[in-house]
Image 1 (cartoon, rainbow, N blue to C red):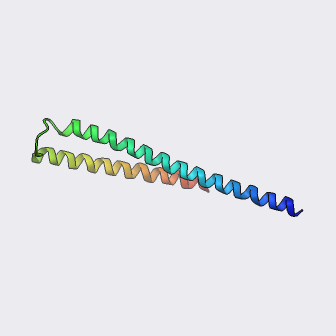
Image 2: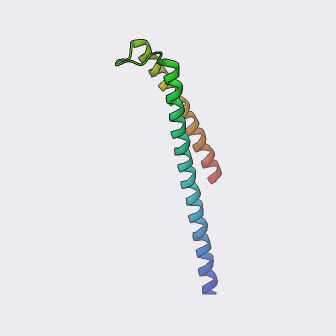
Image 3: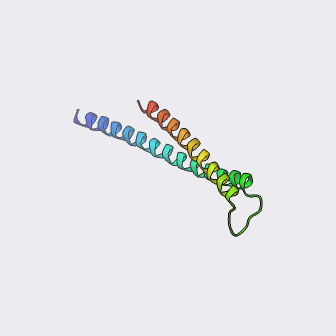
Length: 92
């Protein structure tokens, strides 16, 4: 019987490791998705705000970029919070 219990504990341990691995994979996927969003955001804000590149930003361009960044951060936080809620619900 000791061997059976020992095997059962190992199986439970393996399941816990698999669950932890799934969480780590989900986090890495979220990081990759965020990075892709950053690249997309950079392109969108650049195209929207910068008419002609120069050595300095004029106030209009700077205001546009700040607004664009703030919208991006707000959207990203909303998505991240929603993703976290989904992961937490899945863990229970």
